[in-house]
Image (cartoon, rainbow, N blue to C red; front, side, top):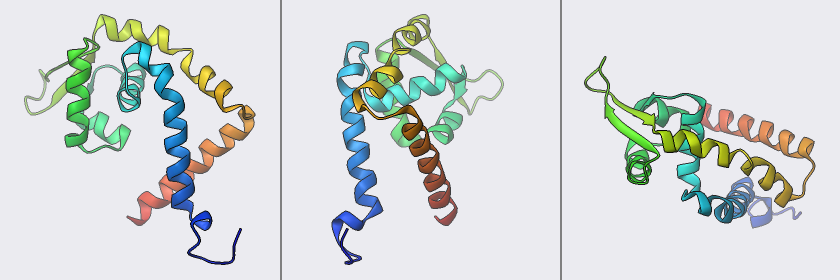
Length: 145
C-alpha cells in the first residue's frame, strides 16, 4: 500500500464497492434459474425469516427506501412469489405475504449460500469474520449519518 491517503487502493469505499460488485456477480448465475435478481433475493430472504411483513418493516430490515423497494415487490408479485395487500389491522400499512410458490422457492434457495461459499473458495471462518466486520462498519456508518 502507498502512503498516499488519496490512492485508490487505500480507500475503504473502493474495496467495499469492488467486493460488493464482485460477490453480487457470483450470485447472478445462481439466482437466474430461480427468476430472481440479487435485490429480489434479499427481499425473499427477509420474507423467509418472517412472513407476512409490512413494507415499512421490509424497508427497515433491508435498509432500502420504500421507493426502491416498491418496484422489487411489484416484480416479485408479477412472478407469483409474493402478494401485496392492505393490512386488515391498519389500512395505511401495505402487507407483503409469501405465496405458495414463494414459500416453495425457499427449498430451491437453500443451496445458494453453500454454492457462493464454494465459488469464493475462502475458509468459512474468514467469511464469518468478514461478515462481522461488515456489520460493524454498517453500524458505525449508520451512527455517523
